[in-house]
Image (tube, rainbow, N blue to C red):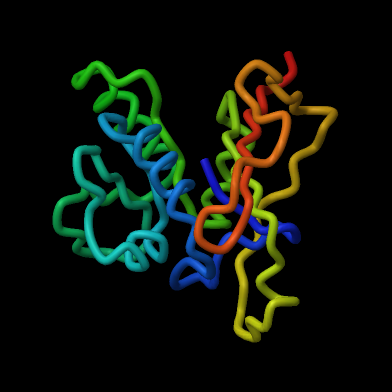
Length: 171
């Protein structure tokens, strides 16, 4: 699950570059009660564990401490731990929540993508710092699930209109 601007920007590598409260609420309502897997930089940008979710942090840094989260060394290990937590807690989904490198690696193993498109361009809007971009979604490998996707933009929330598209892996 990720949010991106018109040019696939996810963030700066250290935080969000926009304020869209309705999408934050969408993220929270989708992920509460479910394990969330994330890379170290995403964890650090949050400033702590997301409440009411099993937080699993992926890092290659030995001895890394993430209070309130389980620390693992690979995406494969994170998925195993996430699936175990989901079974234990009765959660329907294990969510990959960032960042760019973790999303790119996970594209080969996940069954669906839930992508929020934001009607803004942070670089054109003046952001001059480094950015992290979402992986490209290959339409030969992924199809839009029309029943779980927005047909049109949702109203402006904070800084942008937004819409959610659910992609499912083609078999």
